[in-house]
Length: 142
Image 1 (cartoon, rainbow, N blue to C red):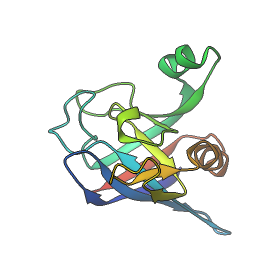
Image 2 (cartoon, one colour):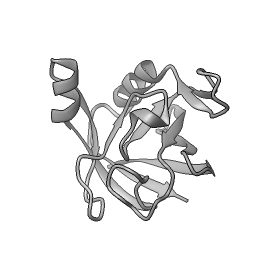
Image 3 (tube, rainbow, N blue to C red):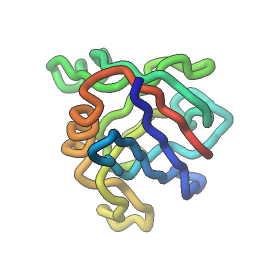
Image 4 (cartoon, one colour):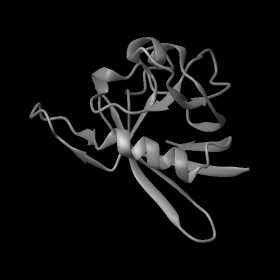
């Protein structure tokens, strides 16, 4: 089973920034991550605990409802006391409810003094393709 590592590098009272790294014998995939801050794993308010999780490519009922079409993303399974945690596109910490957003860089795109992630749609698509839409192990380091 493939694996990816999420390394959290900077946390504030609003958000947590990091990087996701994975690879195979031919290439390495690296991108940036955006999560909510650590708030004791509170549903919709906190990033998830550091640890190891299995991620499964599946239809997201919530994102499909918002978009009005079937949306598939990676779901992070077996998060203690939480469900529906996804890896998906989002630019701002205000757009995530405990999920992990991916982008190719951190940048303050709305001039609020807080770093965001950019090019998220393309990055999430590229990540899913790199992982072949197959289950993988996500290792989150604090």
